[in-house]
Length: 54
Image 1 (cartoon, rainbow, N blue to C red):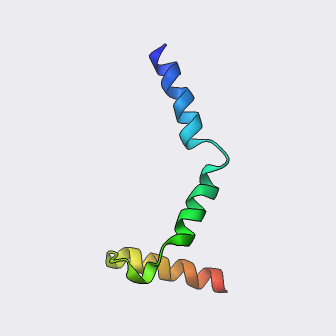
Image 2: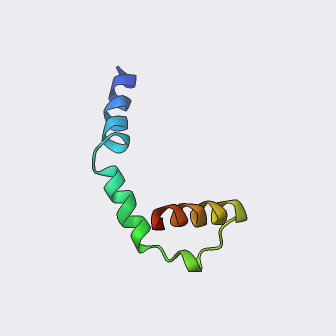
């Protein structure tokens, strides 16, 4: 029974359709130029931006 209760919350927090929108809204508010990111993450972001701009 406890596992079933947890699955209800799992569905709510991780499978709802609004979650990706929530993440996108949060990312839109970030100023990436002010973040101190590890070099591999910086390269990943640069690669993604480059692909989007193609």
